[in-house]
Image (tube, rainbow over all chains, first blue to last red; front, side):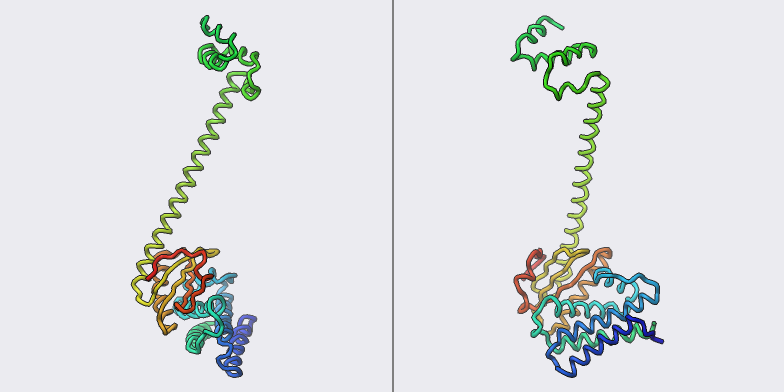
Length: 120
Length: 171
C-alpha cells in the first residue's frame, strides 16, 4: 500500500498540477505540464529510495545513475522524461514545445509511476 | 694552493675565478678563508662542511620533489587527455551512425559531460529515442561518467547553446 509520505504527496500534487494545466488551458503551458510531470516522477522515485534506505540524491547527476543502477526497468522512460524536461526548462522557447512532447512525457510518467507504486 | 691561485686573489676582477678554484682544491678546513673574504651574504650561510652538505642535500631533495610533482602532473594530464580522446572518438562513432544527427558537441558539467545533439527530424520523440540508444552505449562504455543529453532540433539552436562546447562532428 502506497504511504502518504511527503514525497508521495508531492508526486500526487505535481501530477494534479500537470492535469489541471492541461484541462484548464490546454496546450498553453506545455512547458510546465512537462516539468511538473518530471517532478512528479522524481518525487515518487525519491519515495522508493526512502523506503529502500537508499540515501536521497541531491542532484540530477547523482539521481540519474542511481535510477539506472537500481530501477533499470524504468530507466529509459526516466531518462526520456529528463531530456524532455531539460528542453522545456533550459533549452527551447516555451511556445515551441509541441503537444506530442507532452504526450510523450505523460507516457513516460505513467510507466514510471505505475512501476514504482507497484513496488512501494 | 699554487702561486697562481694566490695571485688571483689579489686581483678583484678575478675573485670569482679564484673562489671557484680555491673551493675545488683546498681541503674543507680552509674554507674559513671563503667567509673572511666577505663574499655576498647569501653564500655565507654555511659555516661548516656538514651544514653545507645538509643544505646541498635539502636543495637536491627539493629539486627532486619538484621534478616528481611535475612528472606526476604530466602523467595525470596525459591520463585525462587519453580518456577525453577515447570519449570523443566513441561519441563520434556512435552518433555519426545516426543519420538525423547533424551536429554533436560536448562540454563539461559539474560532475560529468553535457552531450549536445542537434537533429533534423520532425519527430522529436523518435529523435530522442534514437539519441538515447547512443547515450546508453556511452554509459556502458564509460560507466563512471555522467552523460547529460541535451537534444535540440536544428531550428531551435541558439548561439548560447554552442558556447563553450567542443564540436565532435558536424554535417
